Length: 295
Image (cartoon, rainbow, N blue to C red; front, side):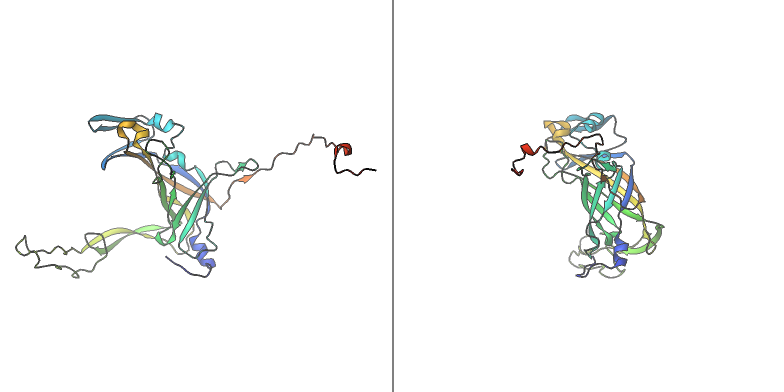
């Protein structure tokens, strides 16, 4: 992460700037995860309708009516949480010379607000050192397991994609844990500690293998094109979704989205109250004014 006491240069600001107006589109391919004391059941489906069957949980058939659940006033399912039109800004971009920047998403679905009205917004972080990946907090810190406010672990995330970016196949050496390694180095460590067991391989021995993966290539100075790899995951208490029988469990509903940058940052603005041109101005009556001069 780049850090400095000096303000960012114009080039640094331009490289980190992801602000703009975006149009979001959800794929509505849902993954529902029911976690009961560490036992996880996953169901995938298309759309928000119908009955979701999780099979038997603690010996009881467990289903969820998705229409009814997402239709509740106290429940916000994934595609209801982020607005389809958002204005995105980085409040400290011009003052903080760091790669990890604050991010603000503003509801841009109503561009003309009433006088004194403020648009809803959400806060998060974007890490420019990690390919412009971002995360937005969606849940309520005070949510409980038997109420249907989303838990604080409910998040939206993704990456700001750049114009002209591509992927290319790349080879590298990785150990069993996925870490970079050099063939021949570290192999055989711990030999002799377990002689007579198997072929004598030590506990510290790891393999270093050549792997192929796709590497993202971004043209220098490329502008932001939109949002890619977007996901929204809302987590609720099992008690609110299934009743007391699953109090303590959690239900997570996840879906994907993408976003297209459609213009520069242009958040909603308040509209001044209309002037009543037919109103008649009545002059003050000096006889009722305690401050009026007396002869």
